[in-house]
Length: 279
Length: 319
Image 1 (cartoon, rainbow over the protein chains, first blue to last red):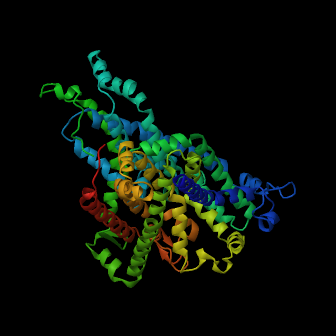
Image 2 (cartoon, each protein chain N blue to C red):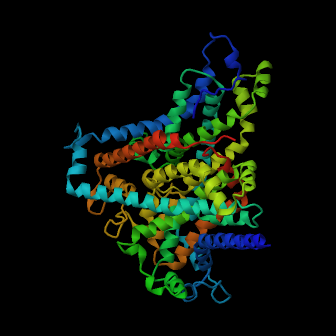
Image 3 (tube, helix red, strand yellow):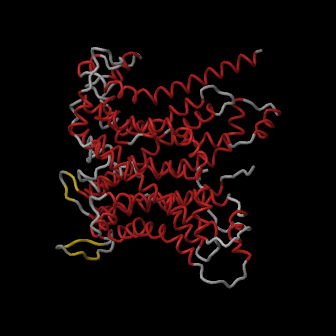
């Protein structure tokens, strides 16, 4: 009986701590989103209240959507992130297949060459990258960002996918070889479809940093036409610092799509991290 | 990662020793090797090389270690370099002291058997991790702003009103405040890594401990924590490396000069200012490369120490 009471108390304590931390994680986000829908007076007089009939105002959203190219920034981010992700997964899977499937002389050397990239941030080579992009005439293009992000994502992708491919059984591939399927056909028709679970991990590890990156858009593609949403909101927020409605609305517009996506995919995301290569 | 463990089922191993050149291997490797070499490895090499050159009268000349002499010998450079390095170290320390124990605690609580709402807590605590540092910086700038007054009001409600200061604007608090903000955002990933490491502990081990009467906190300290050390090692090294990437937060929250009075300057912002220039200085790719080279050497040294001394001593239990 005493043990039971002790367990109940321990459980209550666990819930207490978890709730407190959850609250600390969520409150700042909720405060921003809630106040974005309020009039300027209400933001300051009753910051903790939900918007009511009288205090509801959408001026901020109007300002953001009309006075900035938010939609075009958003499109740029989508194009860059999805293209880089597709490139990372395809090139990464091809290299991982070569490294895990065949025995050849340079195998471990090439494996190590890629693993080194897990530890060295690509940003350290920025000066060289900018120089390269200037010479290739790729400054202020989305291609520059896509290339950089593919290079940035490849080490993680190759690491995770190689580990995963080693767990795949060889029977199917050998049967296909006996049937005279080429190595390319085996990769594209047999192996690639089996990679789906590992692709989720790779997507988690590569997509979020790309979408959220400020450094490379700022340095390689700061023009109005190629700004990503992260750089775009950084510039917009800096200019409109005193327009609280606009700032809160811009933040809300940047937060909500990511969190909506997160809530839809959160199970897969967290499973992706737990099953990912970092163990 | 060892590549010696090639699958024994692979027919390549069974084939006779002499075989035609297998071009498909090169084809599979080519795109990744090309992109990775051209965009990451070669530019990094070029950056390191640039550190040993100087531009004199519009001409680039080999300068041996002259730039490094400037960095360490010239007061104007060395002050900023050491200041940024110390700030980086402090920033890292905040994460290690606060984020790692908190992540372990949360993971231990989340992995309690039959805990209701576990998925809900996990989702909530992970949420800030999804946001960019740009958003995070502005959210906290607003919340800590004395103009909006949310923080002083909350502190008043807790009876701690006297503790309020415009934290991000004060030299003595700004870096600590930014460190805490960074912990707020980054906590999710270490928590999930620790959580999955705890779930990976087999039931037999826990049951054996229970049979021996080792339960509760004692079980955590004696059984689970030792099994977590490898994950703590991984989190440490990930945190260390990402520390050198924490440009975004400082740049957005405090501007390119990492104010007030450079008190929040880290190597990332120093590199950016040196390379691109700021209000009072013009950009210098050579000195920028010197700073990038120093960052590279520091990361290399720490990663080597980690791999050779720490990771070797960590016992990995195979179940």
